[in-house]
Length: 167
Ligand SMILES: CC(C)(COP(=O)(O)OP(=O)(O)OC[C@H]1O[C@@H](n2cnc3c(N)ncnc32)[C@H](O)[C@@H]1OP(=O)(O)O)[C@@H](O)C(=O)NCCC(=O)NCCS
Image 1 (tube, rainbow, N blue to C red):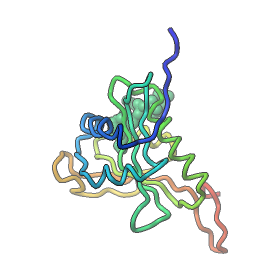
Image 2 (cartoon, rainbow, N blue to C red):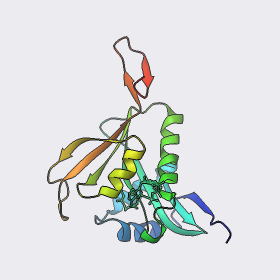
Image 3 (cartoon, protein in one colour):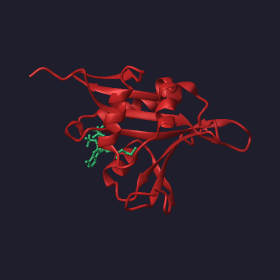
Image 4 (tube, helix red, strand yellow):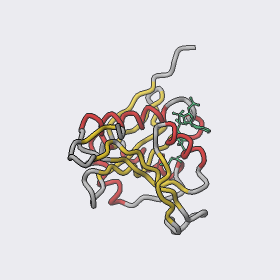
């Protein structure tokens, strides 16, 4: 059997409906028009994942509006038959490479539902940690509480120098 072709591609006005459809299937939360408008302007921070030219996953991030040095992962997911093939890792690595190259981000974070053990294991593998529990974070789904998962990209030390990975 030949190996499948797995690649990432841009989100464009031409394929944004595929992203909408995918998010409807993958996430229990629905996203509004503003979300999709912002995604179209997100550049490398929003990507579709293709498996043999079919859209099967996507990642959408934004720079935290309250703190330009924090990157927020709004959504990252793939259709269930295409899980555990390394596609989630490929999408997350794309984002981690982006923030590393940019060099200006202190941390990257996201919310997950408390019972989403798969996602928690996935993110922990990449060095994310649970830093907070937000009660009643979700309005229309149960459990309504969320964990904040965060990966610190660099720490400030007292003399003002910055060290990657806390070293
Ligand atoms: C979380 C998610 C994105 C992972 O994507 P994926 O493509 O299946 O992940 P990968 O194949 O790259 O897995 C990487 C590692 O994560 C961990 N992992 C992934 N799925 C796992 C599972 N079902 N059980 C335990 N560990 C798991 C493993 O350590 C895995 O490495 P391994 O396969 O070498 O053991 C996917 O399960 C998903 O789309 N879930 C629904 C959406 C969601 O909850 N997103 C997170 C909130 S934004």
